[in-house]
Image (cartoon, rainbow, N blue to C red; front, side, top):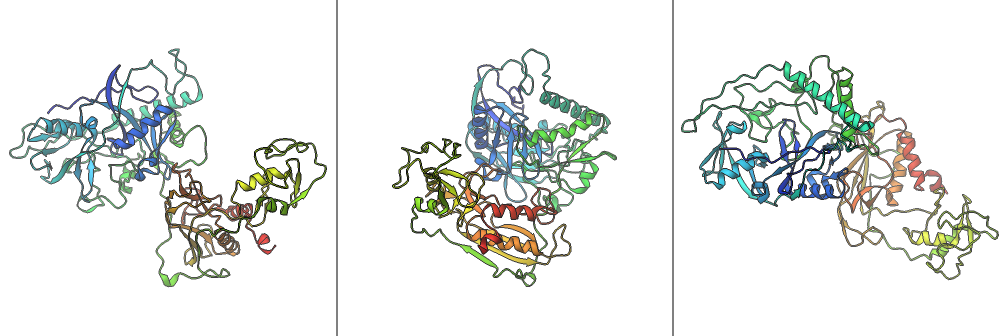
Amino acid sequence: MSRPGQGVMMPVNGLGFPPQNVARVVVWEWLNEHSRWRPYTATVCHHIENVLKEDARGSVVLGQVDAQLVPYIIDLQSMHQFRQDTGTMRPVRRNFYDPSSAPGKGIVWEWENDGGAWTAYDMDICITIQNAYEKQHPWLDLSSLGFCYLIYFNSMSQMNRQTRRRRRLRRRLDLAYPLTVGSIPKSQSWPVGASSGQPCSCQQCLLVNSTRAASNAILASQRRKAPPAPAQPPPPPPGGPPGALAVRPSATFAGAALWAAPAAGPDEPAPPPGASPRSPSGPGGAPAPGQNNLNRPGPPRATGVSARASIPPGVPALPVKNLNGTGPVHPALAGMTGILLCAAGLPVCLTRAPKPILHPPPVSKSDVKPVPGVPGVCRKTKKKHLKKSKNPEDVVRRYMQKVKNPPDEDCTICMERLVTASGYEGVLRHKGVRPELVGRLGRCGHMYHLLCLVAMYSNGNKDGSLQCPTCKAIYGEKTGTQPPGKMEFHLIPHSLPGFADTQTIRIVYDIPTGIQGPEHPNPGKKFTARGFPRHCYLPNNEKGRKVLRLLVTAWERRLIFTIGTSNTTGESDTVVWNEIHHKTEFGSNLTGHGYPDASYLDNVLAELTAQGVSEAAAKA
């Protein structure tokens, strides 16, 4: 069987383009740890193409269309996919196929793995199988693609030519991949720079070019040093097609390592196309615990032995961690700067960052104790009880003092001068509130138009409290829009890093999905609650117990969570944290949400105070 053509790949600004005025099916693919390009689903590819049309330099949040891909983002400028919780980076590409091929018809070929789940073949193999199927061939030999497998269409099975083991396969109809018609643009540097034909000299292009040159030099050096793979083709099975079998050697990477691990021996059977090799730690070739299914992107799960074997002696390992913060350079591109050490003659191995320790060892119920000094072990919040409507004018007047002769300065709400009428004149009307009236807040002394403060209060939570827009001082008891849920807290007999002599306070928040109320962004619409129950940790010392008491108060005032858009996944109408940081990592601090952190307790006390939750406010 001849392998159908893949189409033309033309890297311009990191993206491929089809030949001029020829329709092509677009398939986005990512490079897995076995150096094989794995296709995204048609739904995800349509989403990427839509984002690409709007901003070719932007980023694509994959979780918006596939819940299984929530941690993943594609940076279109660097053409890398990265996982936000681990920092793992993988190259991606935009590939093109004929519209009459399998992806153009929405046909997916899959094989059944050891767990009973179905895994899609690589796209070139899928097209080859479909081509043979349409020509009504009884069987197909995949040796021309580098795999020792035979496909039997009568029994819809796949057989390993070495082990004689059979697996089921199936042909499934799905959404067709996106179609595009384009022409090859003029040659451009990467990233886009001057079109003079000379290499761009901006700092970003110098970074990228240096990174490429360094990584290519290392890969070339390692290929020259790599011993030749033994060529011992297995004999063809009885009744099978004659001919020698050339099995493609697979390179296993430790994380994002640049160093290829030793190839599998001739006696070790190769995995099905698109699958991971058999792990020594997994009985019977079953995947080791925590190993990813390769039909979706995920961080590599190489064993400790293979990881150590893949790094040459004396080469420093550089973990690629998640880079917090915002900026024009995404973490995927920023992580590539590690390779620049190679340009200085220093060999570097990019490895996957260690996994965070999120939870403590198992604890029996008899070892769970109440927190001393904090009554109870559970707090529940129900739907917000609508209070009697408070007149916004009465609320504002409660905290304001009238100013007869205001100074000639700006009102920071409407940006009009205090000596003139409020900017809300004619927009908002309240009996007894003249637009020229000015008041001073009691404690902080900041002055505003009375009508401006009425407008600000009417646009808020309308809970009887008022917050100064200048200094954020809170008047009254501020409440939030947290959905109904449950908060539990107790002691566990384990210590946090940095607090070896104390036990740990564990807080468990649980909020179910539900319908948004009148105080939420989209009343009547369903909201999601991802990642619940959420476990958080505090040291059981005097300050830790103080933080817990204030967190209980904040929970009862519905200030811990709110409904909005997730900064991590981009999902809207979901439960998110509400500016009071929690430590969700028990035994490490790889994500910045764990211990040791000497300033955390003081910082969270300041955040609680900013929400109007403090011991002084409680006593007042």
